[in-house]
Image 1 (cartoon, rainbow, N blue to C red):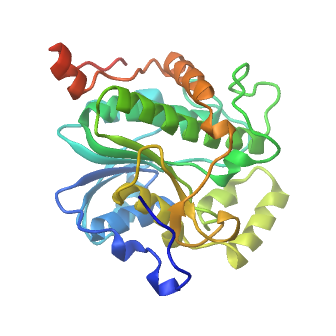
Image 2: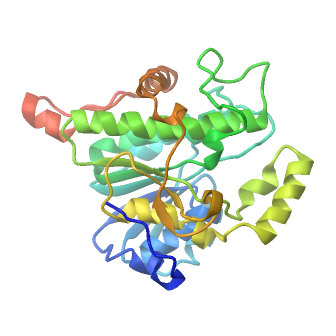
Length: 319
């Protein structure tokens, strides 16, 4: 179990505490900038082979050239389920770590190639499909990046009656819903992994307030201006913002753990275990969201190796 670190800044957990990651392979989505490239760099420096899963391979290659370590670039568009299936189908061998980092935030109303609201479709459904399709290869853990926005504004919920928010779209509401979905997904994934007798763990993390390119794409001019000020005077940089993800990815934590910064309002600081809203802890909603996600994506929880040994049946993944 992780414990609170002392107030001495020098004693607080940082990227140098990751530990030896040699002989491990990781996939990081949205890896060409922001939190993603900081996560890739830290894991690669620790010895892992890291796959940058990116929508634009050219930008991914440019980012990869900045990393000191073993990396490769593969195309993945989370807003296109065909691309998700293609990425997963091409995977060979074991995968130690999947980091579901990619995301869009507070953008104008838009749709994915499969007709889903873009924030819910990219942040949740794309990662839902990717994770389940890669699970037969996974040996250690899945870390999904959520946000403190799962608690605000108001009382965020999953709009089961209108997941695409058709006719009632709000950039902030859509983003909050997608980040709440990330936590409910982690909760139900861990439950299913445990029931299957798998040693793979599902965890979540949030970066606090980290200065990345996400804020510059906000649909509101006013919010963009306010966030620009916050990025300059309040936010952590992308390397500090990636620490909760790296902590969740490399430290011995229980399944379904949620990691964030330990500072005021969880906006900045060293990584530690943090709480989540009641809505993000509701197992009934988690099961309901899982069922809806399976129906929307056509991807289901796979039969894992531990189940295989018990039943003697071949491993299958529904796509």
